[in-house]
Image 1 (cartoon, rainbow, N blue to C red):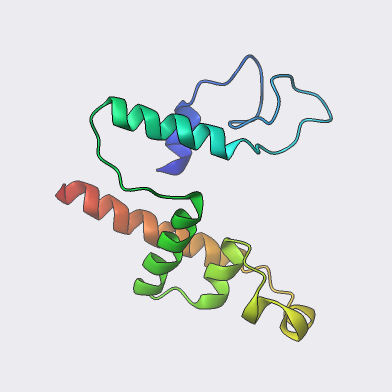
Image 2: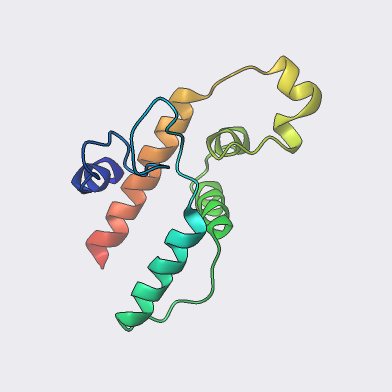
Length: 124
């Protein structure tokens, strides 16, 4: 689902990035860092359309993902690796000895969540 949504987004000029950091593409173009401004505009747009949304932060999205994955049985190491949480079980001596990338388990976790969300949308 995410791939189809991202593919439908109109790109600025010939920019290869969906969320570019700069208005011009060059070797110095970096990852998007303007989340606070974009989030504020998104919140305003929701309010203008009459939606009532409780105050939220971008960190709430990480917490929601981790919670839902825990409910779906995704193991902690995979969830933490996916959101790049390097504290606790992914830090210190564990980070030295466990070099696993968890690529396939992360892919499976994303697909499981997509299936779960698709089911919710069908019921909606």
